[in-house]
Length: 177
Image (cartoon, rainbow, N blue to C red):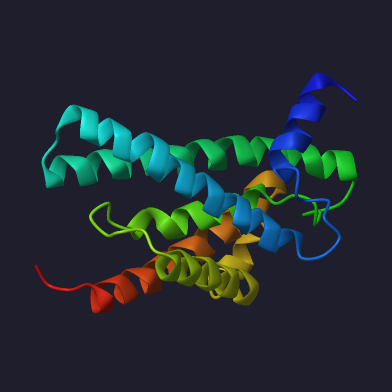
């Protein structure tokens, strides 16, 4: 095995892909952890140091979060493609980088102005898992795309569906200012 294979396996499984039960759920949990780290230790501190107004803060937070989604997605396509060759089968269960990316997409709609709470995070987590399992159109069709792109694309779409519903929930549960 080459060094690139080790890197691809580490990135595609995030260390939890080999857990024998519900590896996709564990992959989503990694996505939750990454989101919480980004928000708590990158977005908030940078924004407080820069003394930004609310619009600038939201724009910067979105930029940071979207950059993380893009990085995980682009590297995920490469890593999942390589892992698929290593495991010698299409969309191996141990590959969970797609769940990480999809979960991060779901959380893109949480405004920085909203206090982080367990209910918002749990709703986003459960919504993503539901849409990832259900795979409404066109998510299921995207699975047939070749290699790592097919592995990643359906979960990114599931994340977008979950984000749309989470956005409505946030809208309905937010108090007016």
